[in-house]
Amino acid sequence: MCPSGPHRSCLHRPRQLGRHQPPGAEPTHGAACSRRAGHKRRRIQGSSGLRIRSAHMIEADILQDIKSNQPIMAHPPQNESDITFYDWLNEVLKSDKGIKLDFKSLEAVGPSIKLLELKKEYLNRPVWLNADILPGPGGTTSNVVDAQRFLEMVDSFIPGAVLSLGWTTSFSRDQDNYGYTWEMVKQMQELCKALQNTITFPVRAALLPASFLQLQWLLQQSERYTLTVWTGKDDLYSLDDLLQYRRHFDKEKIFYDISEAHRTIVKKTTGSSQSQS
Image (tube, rainbow, N blue to C red; front, side, top):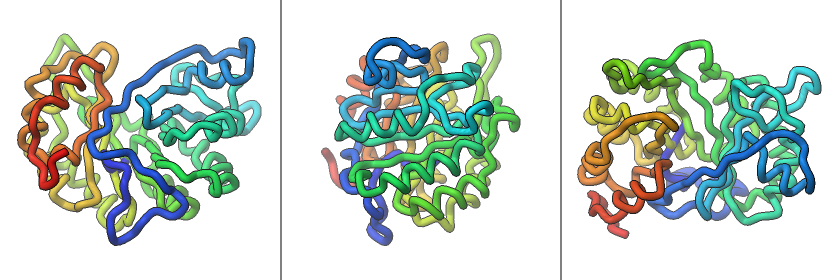
């Protein structure tokens, strides 16, 4: 996954991807059910794989359906849905919102990208392509999407998309949780250094306290890099830890996918920025 800011670098502007989110936009999520029920628009907006990201982005999880051999909107452990990516995309393109696609399996990437390619004339909006391509703190390798193959697929079809490249992680309330290690951030830099895309790195809020120097170093490697801070439903994290990042990092380099109450507090905290907004 790559940057916490949906704008391309000045060296390589996005192709057919028009409007970008403003710096510091804070995404929020809404959820829903997955089964067929009532009006088609309601079904799609209520699919389990869809999350509304504030006024800016619509986010959806994508799996490859074994039975139909096509991408569907679903989030593990739920592996079934009657909402196909094709139907979802057609409905979402009626709005003016950006799109973030969270790929839960490599098998879904190719077919989904081909559908996006067919609709590229309508993609005058931010397009984020997300996958966990490395194991992270407490994360397993079983849910990792193959990094090289994922990057090859998305680059061959949509070189202008924002890449959201992350680590698999876990969080436990009953034991200490370590942060993103030097090895983890250096592995990510090795994968991303040759890319031309803008990149945002999704990082788990509960793991930030032990990751300050590592993430600071990672952002310093390229102007194309940003962070997107997110939190799990049952995670425990300190608002002070978020404010620490806000105060010492360029605020245009950090996006927030956290509770509305915490986003409001964070936004009111002056951060480091060459261009304050």
